[in-house]
Amino acid sequence: MEELERAGCTFPPEVDGFKSLLPVRSSFRENEKGKVDLSLKLSTKMLCATWADGKPVILKLTDQHEVEVLRCLHGSQYTKKTRIIPLVDVVDGRLIVLPELSPLSQFFSFDASTSDDAVGVLAVQFMEGVAYLQHSSVAHLDLKPGNIVVHRNRKSKELDLYIIDFDIAVFADVEPTISRSDGTPGWCAPEVSMGKSYNPLLADRWSCGRVLALFTERMKQSPLRETMHVWSQLLMNPDPSLRPSISDLRDLCPCPQVMKPNSSIRLIPGGAPRPGRGKPKSRSVKGLNAKEPRAQRLRNLPGHRRQMGNLN
Image (cartoon, rainbow, N blue to C red; front, side, top):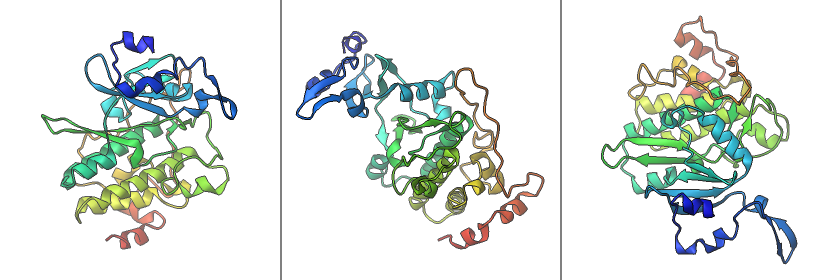
């Protein structure tokens, strides 16, 4: 805690209980149930504070795994392009300092008049973040609205979306298949709760489609909404091997208005592989043939006609 105070971080009066948790090296305490490891019990403990520059921050007591994931994802990349929550500082190896931003649900609640274009921008930024994770061979495993935050610049009104909470994320180059049932019911892929081995990157694609469907619910009927609806349905294919990559979606079904020729959805951002590891190879998806015309490729995807018929 002294290290935080030397950095110029100030705390509200109710911080006394949080201070007692640090330093985390002394993690064993007695309670009515005997000895418990607070470093595990309080792995998601968070607190609001003010950083040295006067900006509000979140202090999160986590584990070294999430610290490693965030550091690998950031590398030398600019966080706005990666759409991964910026890492302000790391204290004692397990206390991370993050900027305090508005949860996506709160943003929608307080700004009910958000235009379709703004929703579309946020949806595309979210997919940019997922594309970066996929290219970096990192599976988040809990993609949902609660793990998305938004910042609106007061002067320019520019919106920036970031993905947060990487405590259960996995490096898919190390664990190409897993069997654990993590994630939030309703937002994780069907295969996650089946108790069998599954590809974590393909499971994230399903969750991406589910979140994208939420964005479309906030939009009025339009070509943009229809396209994003198709995207969400393609990503939520029950067969994991038929879920296209984020970069394939634009070629399969171009997105009007929001998508620009130089969008990073088309050219996946450069990855940040783990130290000592090369960048993962690109993954193909069954049913896609790059030599076919775009319209033909879209028609050839299993279930596409059914999905198109379900548009509201």
